[in-house]
Amino acid sequence: MGDANNDQNNFLKNMRTQLTNRSKYYLVAIMKTIKKKISFAELDEKTRWFEGQCRQAGLKVTPQRIAIYRELLQTDEHPSAEMLYEKVKKIFSSISLDTVNRTLLTLNEIGAAFTVEGSGDARRFDGGLDKHQHFKCVKCKRIVDFHHKPFDNIKIPAEISKKFTVLRKTVYLEGICDLCRYP
Ligand SMILES: [Zn+2]
Ligand SMILES: [Zn+2]
Image 1 (tube, rainbow, N blue to C red):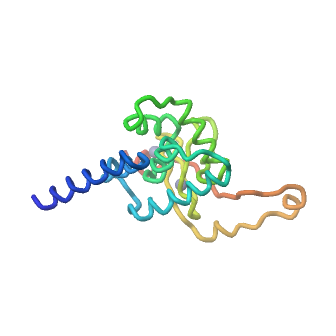
Image 2 (image 1 turned 60 degrees about the horizontal axis):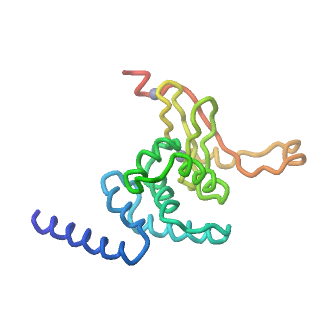
Image 3 (image 1 turned 60 degrees about the vertical axis):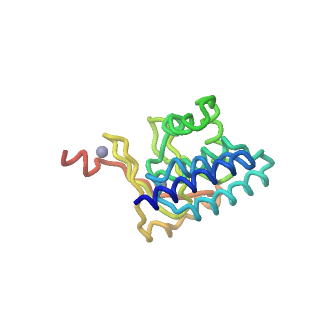
């Protein structure tokens, strides 16, 4: 136990040293050890990919952008801009909700995230680019990921593909979730 704590302390110390020399986003990784659903390795790999996407789109790779993207990757809540803002402001206390909002829309534009379908409520974002579908509870607004393979291969009707260019197709289910159904 003591050893584990020492390891953790050394890890944090090393990270802090790196922080002064390099970009600040490592801090996010440290703070999120409890809730991560992806490994550090995967997180770093995706971050590098994201930096590439930014550069390709002529965007600056700012620590704030990186932090927002990494927060998004580490949650399966499908957060709104407000939800992310609450998290990111713990790291960048001066960040504004507007910045978070605009960053999320930028992520959307460069294909690093997308908005979850469904209307009426605050826009919700998803950084999970692996194929999956959503169930949204109309009562508690929870958005749950699921993956049903046949839904990946839905055919687009000819009359649509003749007229329009389809960029994304998705199956979206809405209803009452288990927690609301059997409280
Ligand atoms: Zn519910
Ligand atoms: Zn999702």
